[in-house]
Image (cartoon, rainbow, N blue to C red):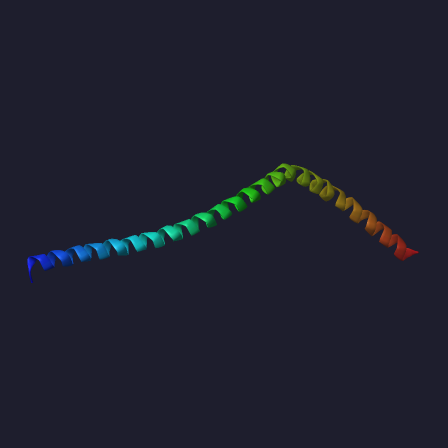
Length: 91
C-alpha cells in the first residue's frame, strides 16, 4: 500500500471516530437533560413535602398535649362507665 493511501485511510478512520464520539456525546447529553428534568421534579416535590412538614412540626406539641389530657381523663371515664353499668345491672 502506498503512503498516500494509508494517510487517507488514517484520516477517514479519525473522522469516523470523531463522528461516533460526537453521536455518543449527543446521546449522553440527551440522557443528562432527561435526568436533570426528573431531578427538578423530585426537588419540587421534596420542597412541597418540606413545607407540609413544617406545619406538622409546629403542631406536634399541641397534639401531644391534647393526647396527654385524653390519656389522663380516660381512667376516670372508664371508672364512671363501670359504676354506671354495675348500677344498671342491679336495678
